[in-house]
Image (cartoon, rainbow, N blue to C red):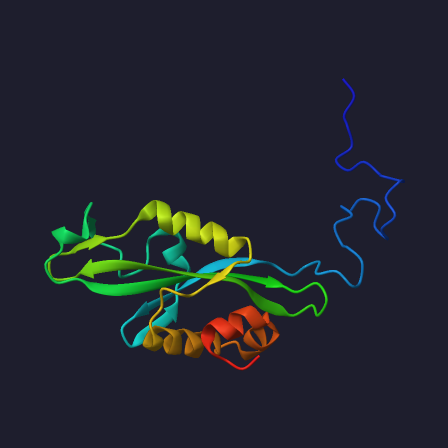
Length: 172
């Protein structure tokens, strides 16, 4: 039985290292830069990035029994989740908030119960991944909290599309 070499030389590869995968794109591309799907949770005066929210595992959601109707909640408070898709812009090679779509859920912390439309959350996350901007559900205070959080990365906000800035009430 013939033993195969561990690495086969690929003469057709145009890279400097013929055994490396040719995964690096042209200079003007966004090769090596990553995309991120994440969320901003807005709970009253508190707002923060929380990647676990994309899986329904934010600290607010943990330990909550989800009910089928908001009528089953005695004393709920509204918590907003803004799905964000952060990606590099091909022209500028800078990160931008490409998609931002807001949803809400009701949490009754005392009873450890909550209500959210899971299918709606998933659909809105998909819309954010497609680059849509929809923050209509947010009240003025929630938009202010969102602006503060997004300004933690001012370059990404500055480089984002005018549509997002308009939705946040910023001059574009």
